[in-house]
Image (tube, rainbow, N blue to C red):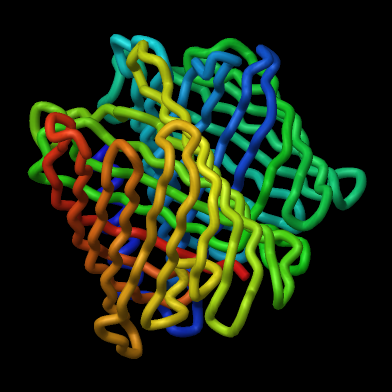
Length: 438
């Protein structure tokens, strides 16, 4: 997993340097939420970044499929994909990709982590609303018993009527095991679909999924406001080696005076192995869900009622989860702190956490250097409650147009207000990508 994450970073940085001036990078997000035929919650976000090169593009994807029962136990499939897509001419495309897949479990012991690396070449035909793909490849490393791979797939957009689409994917493993995905979707507007899908995936019986699919898109029907993802490393930390996180925000009822904003964020801290490039295991799966009702008081001054729900799920470990709910008031000088709108950006917040009592926090960013191609800035984030003080200091840069790439160097400290609970600080470096949709 870490090697593929680093590969995706190197690919995207290389492509950014070779970007053609008349073409733009692209970022997209697809989020599925619903139920499966075993009455489990199903959640599947997919972050994708495309970087154009001559006669094609490079891409990187991060996605995970979470299935949880009423006790929040279930499987999480992680996918980290990277590859190159080229045009052979006309409607014919060729793709070479490397897909890393691993399966973990929440709130239960997982003695063995099953993982695969698919090296796959595909030929893709795109003609109108019809897409057909054929591919072949092999498995590299990972769990035993997987060698050859052949794939076929297709999508028919506008089947019978414009809002209906059909999708199907087949995987033939070792020329004897067949896995598949097949289903349909019904577009409710430009960014929201109703979907049904029946799936027989690696080592799972056939399962059906029903739910809603949110697509990032432009236009009046697009709910999505921002997308961001980051991968960071802690080379001197004894417990954790990587931090992988993503966030997306949606804005509703927005006008010049007010808006309602929903933010969904995930973080997956990765445990240290025997060496820096040894096998890495997720320690937790952390979800933060925030809801703001924001009003503009004056130019450069916004007030908001905020609510935050945090869910902390141990991975591959049979331990109880932790959850907390916070509500309070906030002041900020721009609607989204992560947008580089002002040289000085701030947000202060105070309220009550139903688990940790009175809680206060804030964020402050200062611009250091502002060039035509690159901006350099510093950010300080802090939060204090009755148990502990959290500090996060980062020096970051930002470049790019449609997608901003943001390398950073930082230091984090978790200070327990009881001396025996204090944790040492840690150094971080990494790379993030950020896109403002609207």
